[in-house]
Structure formats: structure tokens, C-alpha cells
Length: 254
Image (cartoon, rainbow, N blue to C red; front, side):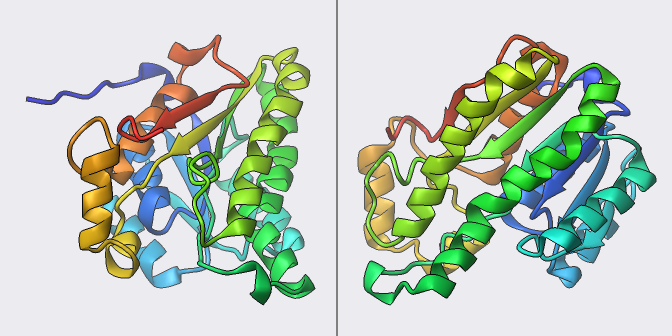
């Protein structure tokens, strides 16, 4: 029987999650709320977000949602400020929002480039910037940036997404020492192929199942909860000396 950890240090801790209404982000919201954290999240899918909040109404600290298009930096800053008023200064940030829409380089123009970077990279940097004063006032914190093994595997079909996810790794490296002096940890949580509803609907077919069976060291599907449980560790005091690292959760694929 599988048993999972509880983290007392997360109880009452304020956590901000971007892209929290569905998929991996929704699992982050659920798992942190079930740990007793004060969870705030942004997304633009109001229906999914409200359904998630209702699902978690019995949590000790039900999550707080605010609609936000994270590609609009002014809206992002306003949402973070409003959520800070609701749950207090943030000691944990999870930069989860992303979109791995398929594209070819021949289809890319300046607008497509800017939109892809805004969805997959830019908001992580500006959300991080927004919560650093909170963490400074609290004497430390944990920032979790979402990467991907896709660029490590040299996958075809999403060159700008791969570029953005590789850039996140550079951002984590570039900030770890500066933030570490203030007891703020920053790490890159790196998923493999997580079989969310979106992945199952759009891309998981017989060939994909065969690839999982052939390439993963561990059998079965990687699930959103597997990423969320790793994020719990990275947010908790248990990982107090972990920063500037890739934490790969991919079933042993890479």
C-alpha cells in the first residue's frame, strides 16, 4: 500500500500557484490545500477553477482563485497583489502555467514567438520578481519553476516551448546564489510525460503508450499527483538546503 508524507511546515503557509485550474496545476492546488496551506491560484478558465474550489471546500484552508491572463503582466501583478491581501505574504511560489501547443518553425512569426515566450517563460520571471519582497520579509521562501524533459530529449514539434523550458533552467541557475543569500530557494521541477486529461485527449495514442513502455524505467503513467508530491517536498522545510537544482520526475525516461 502506497503511503504519502505530510509536511507540518506547510500548515498555514501561503502558496501562490499560476495555471492552477486544471492539469498539473490543479493537482498542486489540491495537494497543498490538503496539507493545510493557504493556497491562492490564478488561471483564465473560470469554470474549471470554480469547480476545483468547490471540490476543496472541505479543506482546512479552501483555496482562493482569481481570474488572470498571465501573459498580461499588469493583470498578473494586480492578481498577485489582490491574492496577497487574501492569504498573506507568499512564502511559496509555483510557476506552473504553460502551454505545449505543437508548432513548426515555419509557422513562427514575431507575434507567435512573443505569445509563446509570454505563456511559457516570461510570467515565471515576473511572478518570481513579485514575490521576492514577501519572502524577504518572512526570512526565506521557496520558488518552484516548472521545466520539462522535452528539450532534454530533443523532442520535435514544439521548438519555442523547448526553448522556453530550457530558458527556465538558466533563470533558476542565474538566481540561485543571489536568492540563496536571503534564504530563498529556487529550483526547477522537471516533469516527463505527465498523462493529464489534455495529453490523453490530444496526443496519447498506441504509439505513445509503446514509447512510455519502452522508455520509462518505471511502468505505468506519470500522473499530475507525482509532480505535486515532489513540489510539496520542495516547498517544505525538509528541502531547506536544496536550491539551484533540477528535480526530474519522469519515471526514469531521461
